[in-house]
Length: 484
Image 1 (cartoon, rainbow, N blue to C red):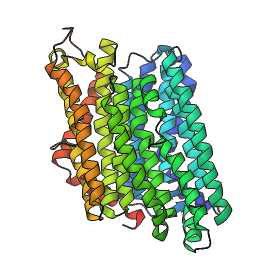
Image 2 (image 1 turned 180 degrees about the vertical axis):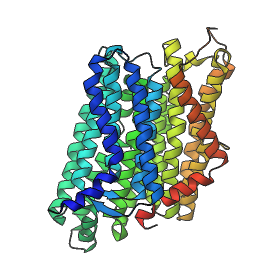
Image 3 (image 1 turned 135 degrees about the vertical axis):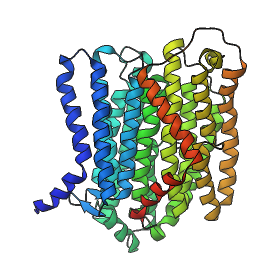
Image 4 (image 1 turned 135 degrees about the horizontal axis):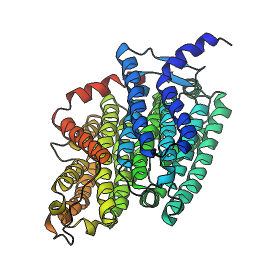
């Protein structure tokens, strides 16, 4: 065994080592400190340090190579999604510090769980071996189950965690069966070697299609694709709101990262003809069902849950096309979605802390009780609708333009119709905030952490919409690994 091959691997995962070390220390020191929020503050600094190390490595240039004997890939594509994981966790920790629903005696454990799941997502984004992908997905999944049920005394939280666990276990089993089929026929777990075996034409087409279907069931669960979305509304409603915010962005981005890598690196070329029609159908189903069901929701967390499902359908369009513009659209959309969706959840956290309700009707007159919060939520909802000059418009423009460029104008039409449907239920909330009289005149305010998180998400939601150039350049540099 050549141990020299391990050294560059250790340097590659240095950000993960930093975060994991602090998460382990947190478990040790948590019982001996009464200042639980201090652990969250330190966690933010640790995440900032890890992000700095990651940015420095990207700035110096990353050699595209295989590390840890093919388990991980070193490339700009992985760095992009690892950065998204860190930023997501940092914002969620800020939002969590102002959330009243967390058990005070175990708040430190909560922050350590967020750090652990961050490491899992980062490893998933760089995984290039089916075994490593499975281990990373399970690490993220198990931690997600714990976080979803973190409010142990709340029946809804326990119910959400149980449903999440049962459905997650089923999807993992189906995905593992697909992986075992690929391994049995290709004699390899490395996705590059799998591609060479599949491209040779020696593998029966039915086996390839069945393997793809099983893999999509596992990945589809993580990114909430229809029909693997059943867990989403119940888990979002029952889980602590910061956890729902995290699940809507972090695991979704990591899931798309591994889906792109497996399909385009492991099953690209002529094999695409077998999975492109499947993804096109899943995309249409996902965006349509997500948007239509969202119209009937009265709970804002459930509405955002179905909205999140619909956005997975939009993002999947970029993978259906598999051209350069489509992949740029996926990365750009996920970056934008991070800020606008976490921002919307941030307002929900502040409001629910005050009014003790997540019902949309209770947002009546929010513009009178807290003009800034109402304005922030309105901007986030407008961005989620895809209306200029917000960032959401830029994300949808890239995806829809990719559809037209790739000869799928009919898919763009379906997506635009869905965006119009989505605008209806987003503006239903805006109408309640601005046009319905408030039943309570008490002012709603948030904490320092929530204020910082909302400021950051709001600024980026606006800046990316007005000056998208630097962010477009960022995603252009991040897809070279895929040969685009």
